[in-house]
Length: 61
Ligand SMILES: [Zn+2]
Image (cartoon, rainbow, N blue to C red; front, top):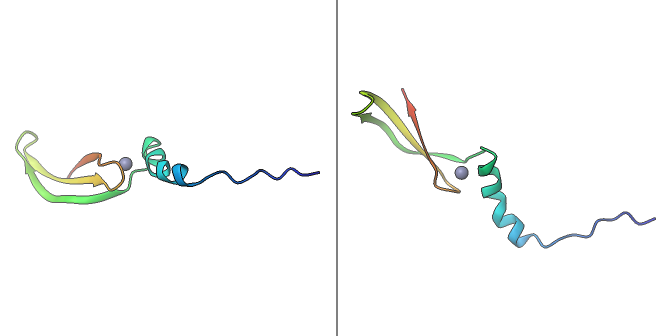
């Protein structure tokens, strides 16, 4: 019995791995700008962006 699953090419898959994680909400957040003042919100915010997909998130302090 040989139930061995053959290895598939990883190159493309590896490339997509990051964005797959991102699509599942696992972003690689990197601090972009710390303690900026958001005029609209009237408070201090910290901006992060994802090292893989470039998505931004804003965290209010
Ligand atoms: Zn991401």
